[in-house]
Image (cartoon, rainbow, N blue to C red; front, side, top):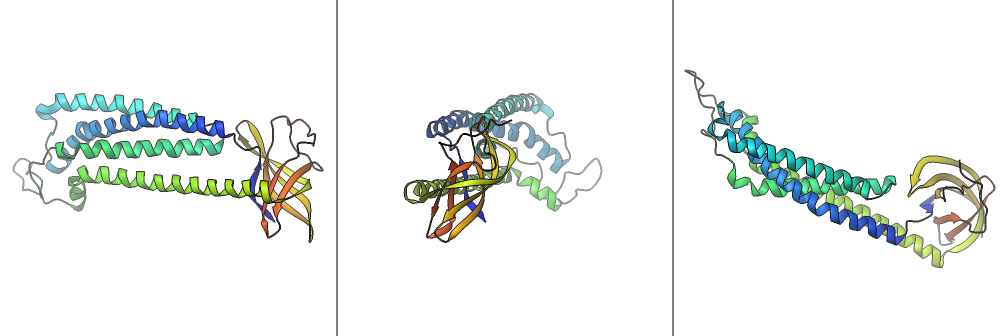
Length: 277
């Protein structure tokens, strides 16, 4: 049977607060940098390519100077925004869980920033010289736009709309993950105060090759006594770097007699574990 929680050393509230503060401090300038990238990229690159695609003309022409400057501005903004995004990825923490949070947060800043920047640029896109058909090339005839051309025509609205949708989905995913983690923390905290505590023993374990805040995580099989007899639970345990569990090691088990599937397994402070590695 499988336990409901990943147990062991929990992340200290101070560490979580510091990680959240770093994400906020990096996230705000990252969003602004992506907004600048969205604005300059829309007007310096996408606008020109859009006109060339729809009208078969050299859309740069006399505007090559401003467009070239915006393209350079876009390159600088993307460099700054990407650097801040990588800093968010590593600044959240070294565990896989924290890096996942950092990745989602950096993705949110990118999509939200591009949505804002490209949205501000909507009134500044250059109107095509001809709508519904391409300009005739030399002595040829005008060709009607294809479905793809109409998609390109509405690009000024599609870019911020798609980016905004991605940002909205990312917010929903992050909110759902936060609520799930908060619910699991509440259940674990309730077990710590109200659950029945017994001493269990590790019967089998396996290193998962995962480190959480510098501590190894193990998959453990734990046997423990209950009112209805002995039970075995398979869960994960995080222990200090130099104190890993071993078969036969005692662990502290808390469980809810009314709900056997809700189990909390933690290292026993009185148990002496052998050094890991």
